[in-house]
Image (cartoon, rainbow, N blue to C red; front, side):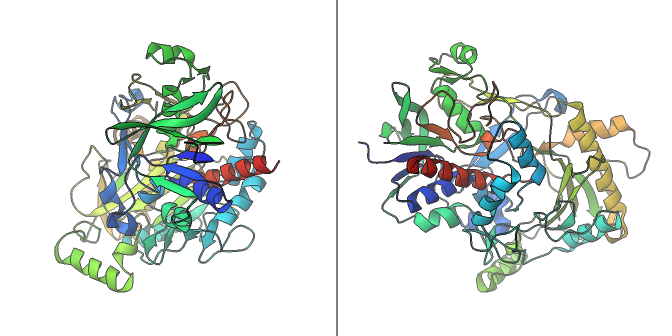
Length: 529
């Protein structure tokens, strides 16, 4: 039955914002989320988010062997629960640089320049400290300063300033450059995901139908228009219909996958995997982008890192303090401090640092042993492009993901520059007095450029920001128009990080929420016209 005006596929960062705004406007909405509800305490206690990775509440996407990373396969965990990435990330609130959105506009995305998106960011934001022309304080997405600063996080900020990086108390201000502490999407010591903020405000509204553990397999058509979706619910294959539009908000891997499984995508590829072509749209699954980082490690002289704080009496103490006062280590997003730096004189930051007061590994790699600090330089505007394709016509088969990391030499150059500056910061007085030596890289200056490059290829890992695979624009590879409609198909839009023509210079959660807000605007404006 046509009981819904809109079907939103994916209850993640963008999806929850979109759903809330549509329901608030009096629209009947069906939200379908592939994962379970966001009802595990590890989601809502800020410092325990890493415990969610690898569970049923994350997709564990994996690339093919990456030729420029020594043939390694890279795991890219993504949210698979209400709130999506905003329920499993490190809660860092970053919008990106003003120039990012001006570039979108120059690429044919009219209405997406900085002056267009700033009011949407402000409308979304409920900042506990910052206001004025650049920040909002009344929005649903709660943003606040950290309640806990680890010794090593504070030492990084001081050391970065000593190394020549200016201090910053607002990475979302007029200039992103500087070193400081991240503001986070937390409120009263708890995670403020898009599910805990936007979706919660309409959770009990009768206009909203919310279903979890629903795996959408393909779109349904009447003529040239999309009128619903087919989905697996338990052992049953069900069909859901809507009166107006379907909006895919399933992320940069799943959204293009659903399009291709439904016959929308590069015709030759679809035929190769046995999918009937509904609409030849070459850009679907192309233009894959992601942020890559290369950890620089140093051992500490004393056992001051986070190692061991999740076990025994210390873990009990932290838990009791959190329950009684909402203070202490468990209120931390762990990645408390960082920096944005122009390493090569481009006039704007090209490297971001995420600092962890512990030695960290990756999904498939153990961290170095002992106590220490990890400084993670990330290349902000990678030029490398990859792709997401179908492995087969089976909707439950893993995607064929070729990230093509570091295929552009400039990306490797930027990563090396970030590693070199991280070493300089570790040698600055405020950190030098705490660390005894660097790990994995020689603790001297006799390191060749080739050695740096090999190091980056060996340790580089994702920052969990896949984007770009349903790019917005007007060129031949554009998948969606500037109002997020899928080109050549009626009744279908995409609203998530996949529509970014170029990835933003920073963490992608806040921009994804902004995209959800913008999609709601476009839908409601079209209805009023």
